Image 1: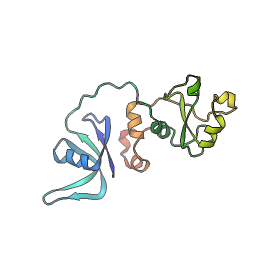
Image 2: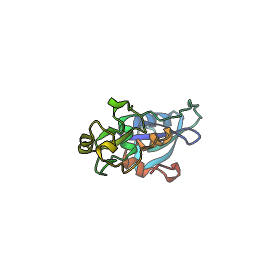
Image 3: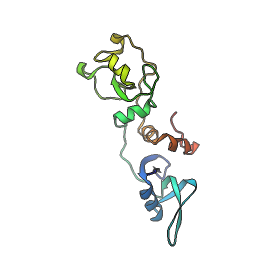
Image 4: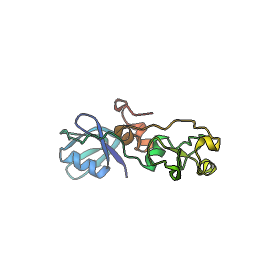
Length: 167
């Protein structure tokens, strides 16, 4: 099922919703379609609605301030674009720079995407102890960047330029 990006009335990314939920919001006049899939429409007996890619809420929704994006394994893989931080190949696992057994936790700055071979080779050591070098440094994405980056790759490429997507 397609995912639709929901923007606040101020054009700030809020969430992604299913296509069904997006159409319901548009039909209830709670949102307007900012960008639609070209040539695709949803038809019913009395209405015809473009299939939305991006919708914007009609009224501003106050969102509690989020200082940090929530950490997740999927989020780390998406942040690092599924590329191993040690060799650059396709990453399938998450590696802790400072191993959990040595006090390293699940945080944006302590985890990187890794291929299974490099994760196994590094094992329960730091990269320096294992003689391995990080190709990219871990960073903490903003909540809005994490949300937009979590969209599927094909969907991200089709989003408008004015959203200012992270690379």
